[in-house]
Length: 323
Image (tube, rainbow, N blue to C red):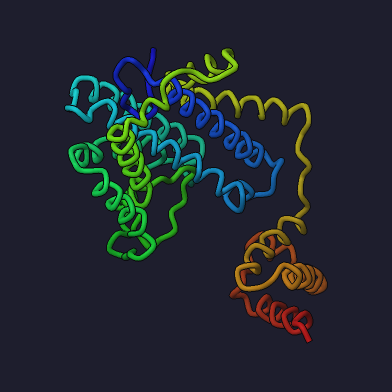
């Protein structure tokens, strides 16, 4: 089956380098998911792939995919919507998205994927139809507005779960893959605007032809042309491989002190520098052990609102504040 993660496929003749770009994006996604899998099995510290360079890498990959969705939408339907083709591919993506939701709800019910990249692609493919006939400049301005909106407008009115796909709620959403319409539909619109400009300027020819070496070109184009299948298959394969590795070379098990210290440092680093947080958290651990309440704190039976933990935090803050 030749399918396309964007749910739409450019008409023949295909632009070979566009398939190559899609293939590269899929390989990049697989490398990110490899990191996520190693974190899931305990080889990396909790939260590693959700912050810093890893977080930026994930956002670049998602943005690239969604731009390709918009780009392909213009190529396939810019001169008139081919409804049969569009609806068939949309149905494939919707079914795949539903499968992802069901599997992740079974595996990780506390953070299952209810509106991830596939859900966003399905919604964006439909919303994108409204912009097909508009000039590139209007589409680009709409893209800027969609990206900017959640940074300037969120409301508790959107806190009920039914509104979570919009991305405008104030509550913290827990999901292993959360790609709401705002701001991510903006990437689709940018891709649509880019395609319109390249069509108008004759730059689309830059995407024709192949790359060297030939074997790499064939491999990337194959992946790019079967992107939905690759997306659905690659993570089960990767997580199975890491699962097998964990039985041969088990990850080192962190001590309670290391786990508590890392959590403490992450919380402390929001308002303080790393040097202070290291000393502060070490002090909290030592003092709570001296008072025989560390086990309770680690187990969550004593939190930051506990009077004795507040007393320890105040003491450790006083002892480690710069003179």
